[in-house]
Image (cartoon, rainbow, N blue to C red):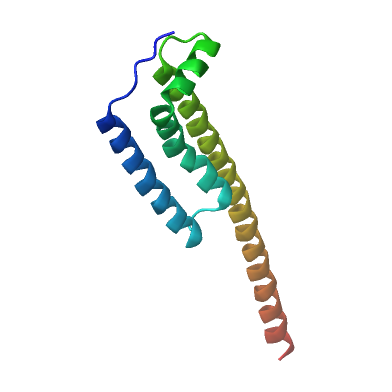
Length: 126
């Protein structure tokens, strides 16, 4: 099992990115722009590379256990799973909102027809 450690520069850059990205996500979550599920899912985009850079022996152990030579292949595989899970969640939300929008439009149309019928009946009476 190879154990080439990442350079200090790599660790610093990845850690700085992870810190800044997590702070931005936290701020948007506190503002209500993201919910907790989105925060957790999107934070893995920063946590996973930081974990692989800060704990290279663990990364090599995971890659060795999965039978992959390079740890970054495992990391990118997990990141793809995270991205696809996020996209699946967004697609489900989009379809739910689309159905809700359709139902609201139908309800508004029915209310408009009901209002027109009431106006006609009040004109014929008065």
